[in-house]
Length: 265
Image 1 (tube, helix red, strand yellow):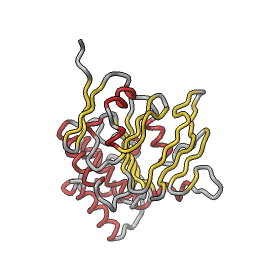
Image 2: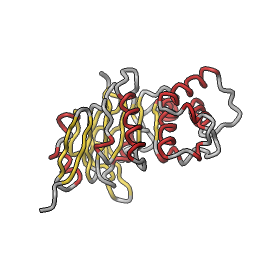
Image 3: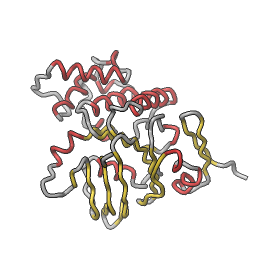
Image 4: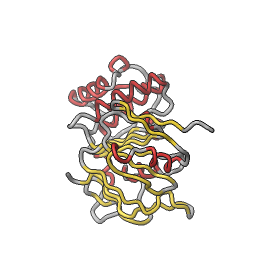
């Protein structure tokens, strides 16, 4: 399998501080990765590197065969090959636009409708992705009136619209109640187990948000990778305790993970 993402000795330095420090990591075609770590660990920095919106201060980053900053690499041609869903994208989208329009605009790399004439195939794709994420009954609702869970599902459908080779999910379950989280995890699990779905990278703080079908985990703390590899070997109590800086127990029941701290003595 070819590498979808390859970071070699990558550091990102801002104001003299390393947001990520000497990171080497590769994601192969068909893998589904979860990035875990506390606030400020460097999770979002890794995702921004993978999206090509952030370049390394040192080291090399190669995405879908294109080296960032390399001769002949055009990030404006690269970015449509990468789907991104997160709070940063939600903030750019017009609140008065309908759900269907919000997803359709991704076909042209836009955030708002202008004078585009969408083809029937575009609308069919948009409707299909929204249906897959349980949003068919909301097609004519304004994006700004959606609940947090409905908004997250719309953003994922939008990210899929360009048929990306790499799908990036930035804390997709953040802010959801228990029912909303479980519904989203169930739908992400269906997507993750689809052999035709793109390679995926998801950032989260919580192991309970890891959907079935995700294959690998990367743990990061203070800009340095503590563990990276297959979920079944790397998502351990020891690694998670080191990552979050306190004793934690990881339990694996069925196809889901949970974590909890040790009781105070």
